[in-house]
Amino acid sequence: MRKNIIIIVSIIAALIFGRMLISHFDKNKAAAKKKLLSTPSVTVAEVQTENVKRQFEATARVMAKYRVDVLARISGYLTHSYFKEGDYVKAGQILFEIEPQEYTYAAGRAKANLDNAKSQQAYYEKQLARYKELVANDYIARADYDNILAQRDAYSAQVASMESAYRDAQRNLGYTKVKSPVDGRVGIIDVTVGNYVSMNSGPLTTINSADPMYITFPLDSKDFVELVRIDGAPNVNRDVEFIFSTGQKYKYKGVQDFHDNKIDESTGTITLRATFPNPDDALLQGEFGKVIIYSNKKDELPIIPQTATMENQEGLYTFVLDKDNLPRMTYLKTMGTLGDNWIVYEGIKAGDKIITTGLQKVIPGSPVKIVAKAVENDTTNKKTNIFIRIFKKLKKIIFGGNK
Image (cartoon, rainbow, N blue to C red; front, side, top):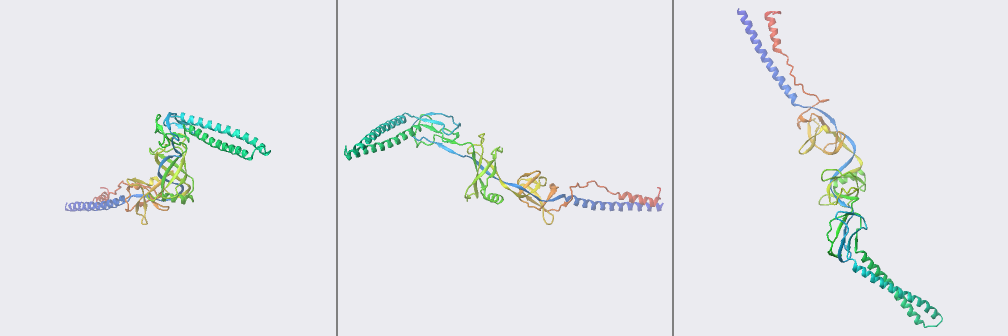
């Protein structure tokens, strides 16, 4: 009996010791597992490059190629207006009429004076021909001939003067019809019918040409230097796209065909200009938006998968591994996409090692586990029941193999 009690006590002690041993083992295993779980598994790739056309953005403003103020070139009352505000007009089309009676009369008087001078000139031409024959035969004095010659010359000069006066009178009469000097769209009428106008009255209206249109934009001088480096020359025609202030892209492309000869010292920009077709009148004088200008030649730039980036309030970023394989958060400046990749022009370079998967659990400066491919941590705990094995072994020793 006493022997059985000792055996039972021994078994209980062994079980207690086994339980303590298992508990210690579980704690060590849990600590090791926690440490393993806190180190995220990630995949890494080297940054590759691609030859692409560079693009640069800038604010922009639409300008008419021609902007013409329509002015009165004579004085008088405005009697008619032959268009509606906003109409598209052609060069030479009549827009206004200034009271013509005074100028019609002036042209008539000038014509009459011219006709009179011409008739006098014709008379003295005939007289001169007769006097020339008479003086040759000594029938008249030379002085008489010279007098007729002087009269003829005087009326010839008078004819020339009268012709000039007549043309001037006709010119002024023509100015009573105020015509459009260019093709374009008419603006607001600044002086209405019934007002007295003169050359000092200011514009009657303004005409803006509509097709093509200019778009000017100030480009950062550093970007312009980059464009010159890529294309190899400053005087190069480049493709340009215009984006309205609403965010909608204009359907026609333009060509950058001019750049200023100086950099604005206050802004550090250089003014460029692009010419755009405008057959649908979608571009209006004074409209604001932005442009994207493309280099003519291609430049080698880093590309990274879009899945290798994340975004916060400060912008787009990725994780680059340093020499110790510790992740460093790096913000990127991109210029669009190429397939599923970002085209990057600032932030990384070719050969940098970036994290491509597992970014969500990465902490900058903390170690990561680099794997060949993304794997999930095994959360299934397959414990070996040491306690049961010990119990069975003790039971076999005390009671025998079959009990």
